[in-house]
Image (cartoon, rainbow, N blue to C red; front, side):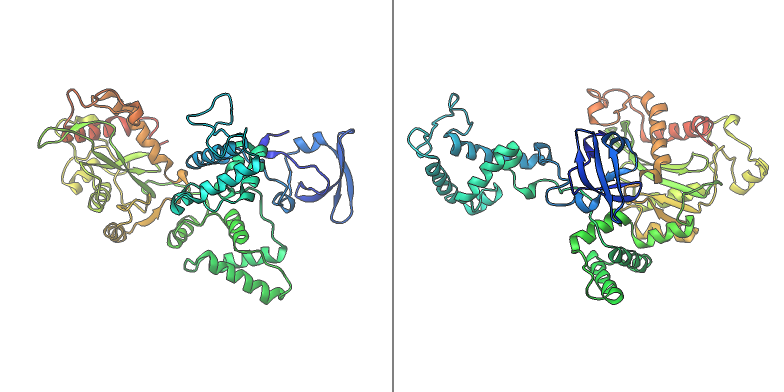
Length: 478
């Protein structure tokens, strides 16, 4: 057996797919440890249980796994969301009171005032207790009963709930709509498959349309190409198949076209500085003192990371969340040489290969620190409002940059930037007073108590560390 998530149904009539070919279980021979399989063309073969259990290309067929009695795991309490579990416990208490006269189900441990009048098992029958429970639930406020899942409960409803409770336990007391959606792969015919791919190609570069519109396009394609005799699944099945084959489709069409235009739809291969610059913002994990009242505050750190050299080309500290102006100035800093500061020595003034340092200094009007500067070609951001601001988009257009937001549910699009935050935290921020840890659970008793750096001192420290340590380490330019 390959795990509970990959249990094969070997009962007669079940479907299996072995190496891409579909078979049907014709006969099962447990005393011999094998099954007889038959293909659609009539070919038969006998295979062992061991062969099917260990074959990497064997799986249950989607044509039978989604049936009403196949491929469905038994409902369990784990299928219930946390907020629905209390409602299921309330239903079970009512059912136990009907069955035993006690809401806890144990006559030896009665609750206060139990058994209640009308539920005493010594003087009432099961049918009488069910009728009493129906009357009791009908007297509840309709809105309250609906919220508790006890609205419109009749005599036969109690019988059905009791049968499910005995079969599935607490999960049997839950409404089927409370449980998670069943698994299984929906199956479609070859004609519908062709229609789905045709609609996919038709809508790929068009404006975004709803799934209802795509459903109508599939129906129209099948009707026009194959006639009215070909059945087409309903909306829910088509939506599940579309999501499984083509993904959730959360990317905006404009951004999807940008990805294919810039990177030809393949993997991103960055081979020169400035080709891709990743922008991201995080809360600085260190308390600092603001310059007016001297109170300990948290600031936001925004960095621009060159994906090719892994160097922090520019950064900004803001007392409040950054704005589009701050990000625009960050892009300006990426393009301008970083000036040398009074406390920096000659070891931080790096010569640029192929260009004399005097020429760079004459161009910039000051001595230049050893930090790359260039005009970015592509800017990768997340989907924060500050990065989608119209002002920032206009700035990037003027600079000639391609705006390329990270794809939804694709953490690899900005993995280098997130890793840079972790490295800076481990090598610098953990050494400073006022460090708050990764989150609140890792925070000390009072990290703001003690000597703290001001915002200006923190900015100077980060700038010095980036030029002297981070850009000069082996993890950079690797």
